[in-house]
Amino acid sequence: MDTSAAPTPSPYREGLPPQPPGPPEGEQHFTASETIRDLVIGMADGLTVPFALAAGLSGAVAANPLIVTAGLAEISAGCVAMGLGGYLAARTDAQHYVAERAREDQETQDYPDREKWEVSAILHRYGLRGETLSRATEAIAADRRRWVDFMMRFELELTEPAPDRAAKSAATIGGAYAVGGMIPLTPYILMAETGPALVVSATLTGLALFGFGWLKARATGLPALRGAGQTLAIGGLAAAVAYVVAKLVGG
Amino acid sequence: MDTSAAPTPSPYREGLPPQPPGPPEGEQHFTASETIRDLVIGMADGLTVPFALAAGLSGAVAANPLIVTAGLAEISAGCVAMGLGGYLAARTDAQHYVAERAREDQETQDYPDREKWEVSAILHRYGLRGETLSRATEAIAADRRRWVDFMMRFELELTEPAPDRAAKSAATIGGAYAVGGMIPLTPYILMAETGPALVVSATLTGLALFGFGWLKARATGLPALRGAGQTLAIGGLAAAVAYVVAKLVGG
Image 1: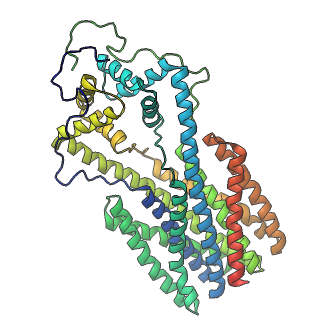
Image 2 (image 1 turned 120 degrees about the vertical axis):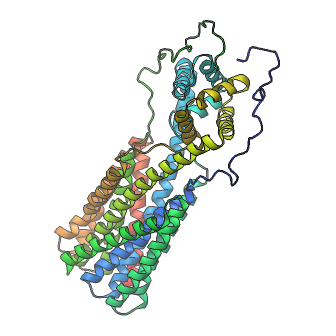
Image 3 (image 1 turned 180 degrees about the horizontal axis):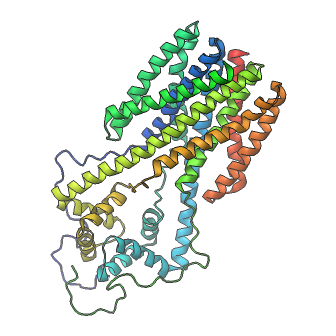
């Protein structure tokens, strides 16, 4: 849509100008990767629920083999359910993206004026007006792939999922749940009496929750000590509730 | 940056033109709301893990009161852990948004040229060139709030979370987990023998998983029967694994 054929001194003429200098250490933004998110999901529940279940049963049932059986059954169930759940969720996201993209593509063919208007409406919100708005809209709509790209990201707020995301997500969540769950359960496997096993389990799990909360807070750029305290508090509260419930029902 | 003072016939001159007609039934896009996502997270795990735990213990321990104690302890632990986990995740998202926004705002003050270049780089990717690119960039950077808005959404891909999101998320996930968990456990509470309770529990949970998977698929616009089958398969597989593990360890 640039109608003037005269040369222009603007560095924007053909493409991007060279990048101006930014902050000396680069831009420091914390956007947790999807793998870290998956690790957090699996590990947080894996540490908390099996610990709380074992602690709850310690109050009601004074037999370690039974607690170990229940704990291992819970860890396997949680590992499979959360891992496959993560797999399906990622697969669903991918299918959803493909379906919505096809729909959006069709709309740019059937209702091009409406879809151009929608591009304009988004750019208008960010301050584009008059000729700049119409030229920017036409530039985006000049290439159908870019046009649909724009609508997917800025109207529907959908980003294309990575192709191997589903399998990686399943393995990360399921693996983190199993590893997290074995920490509170190991004392019950190795020790004969329930009382001491509960004490060791609580200590190990408390340390693990604290350290895990610390790392999680660091990864998202938030205060580390507070993050550690909050993660520890959730685990403790879940265990306390499970303990009281098991004591009331079975004790 | 519109330098020409002459009137222009473009309808984009002052603002948006009227909206052109679109598809007769409106645009049909399926973007699951955050509440539906929370319901799915809580309900899927709530139905699967307590069912699998109870089924697993049915293979190893022939006493319903014990299965009920373990099941209720698991449901309370899972409900608290997932509910509070959801609360903290939503709170962390909100704090993360505020922190990143402050950082981005500071950068537009300290390194305006670099941040303008970043706006250009994003628009360039969608086909804006030459004068249109420089004008659009200046229009966005003319208002700091819009400029930072643009960088938050299109560079960092962060959207501002709703203010009451954390509490709602906690209640939805925790509540869905508790409701989901009581479905497989109720037969063990009401019936005396483990074998028949397992059969009723499996039937009820199977129906619930199938119906829940169906609704979930409908909400995301995917094939409903396939969604129902997949959800059912995850629950069945998790229970089978838990059953085998409990049988091997405790049977």
